[in-house]
Image 1 (cartoon, rainbow, N blue to C red):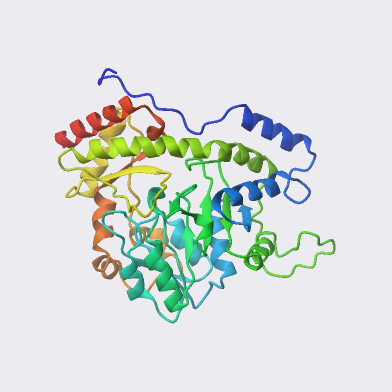
Image 2: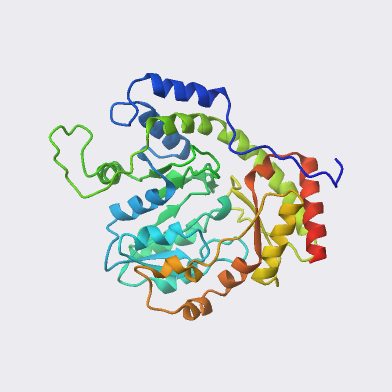
Length: 386
């Protein structure tokens, strides 16, 4: 392949006649919402089976999935939720919109996932939940976090928005004994444009989730006896039909991305100044939501210029998430009493990563082996020029 030719990666989202068939099936069943239809119920069964959970609930989006997961655990005013400082801001806002204080802690400099030692230092009597984020499909250290949870009595809520199909030491997300929340937003590893799901470790929590995602109303209610407070987080039948088709091809796509990342990571690591995201080998299946790498020493401004250069060369490149405490929205409600500078001092890894990290869309990892060399060639030239 000519190195001067912009690479043509597979498109995203991907679809075929399976999505079309599903949409027509949902249309013709005559019921377009989950109460009375069958697509959402069937999707919950299929998605739950794939992730090792018998208690799955489909919802409107990934942010609502997190909010619902926290709500069923009693998160609200007067409580705190520990979250990674380096994450998409929904992780913290799901807690803050319930009135709970989000407490950012630092992340591991290699995996970019929440640091268990920092979590342990942040646990207080007010702590109601710990939220590890499986960054780019890389599991957080679930062994250390599970021990912290057991010792402290504080439950985990896995933010698995990037972790469809991931495995930790052979165990799927739903087999780890804690609630997990997924996203099906347009860029995710499987998508219906929007959508989300929560897997629960038991049926009682799932039933509470169902009530609260349906305005507190039981499925069979005919007399408006709303048993709890809640909102309308119900997924529609059309989205569920698309997600069923998306789920059916997920496994093959993960196989491809795992192979391509193993190739690309070696190539990126050979470029002076480039450090790819490191893998914890206990995470034996990684769906690779993002191909992430750092260029340590770059300022945020220079990193942003580098991203612009990569995009100009045909790569779907993006700047990494900002530290959540450096976003105005983080401070609008239920924020910690610390200042930005105080949080930054105890989150040195986050401070570095959000300034010097770049990610490539996962569709690049659905490309060819030759295209992995082309990616590395472009990154190498752009970094050298910077």
